[in-house]
Length: 71
Image (cartoon, rainbow, N blue to C red; front, side, top):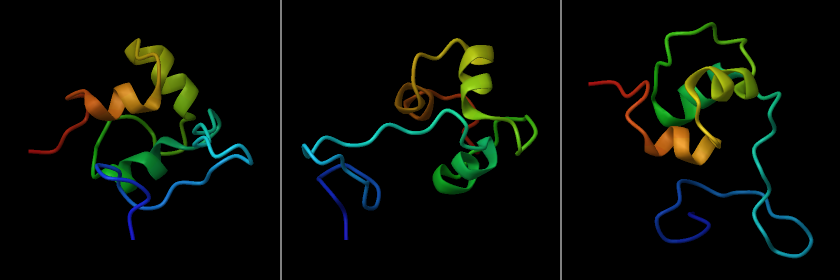
């Protein structure tokens, strides 16, 4: 069951109802599995390091980009 139209799966929310941010210490391998991507880095790299290396401001912008998309 999806959380909202256009979203994949259910997302955790704060007490005020806003969606929680993705933790920066999440591993890249988790994102690769969730979104069927291959960023070409070690799967145990932290997401904040990947964002810094790619110049992306957020995980959502990274996922919206073509970076790591499988053909």
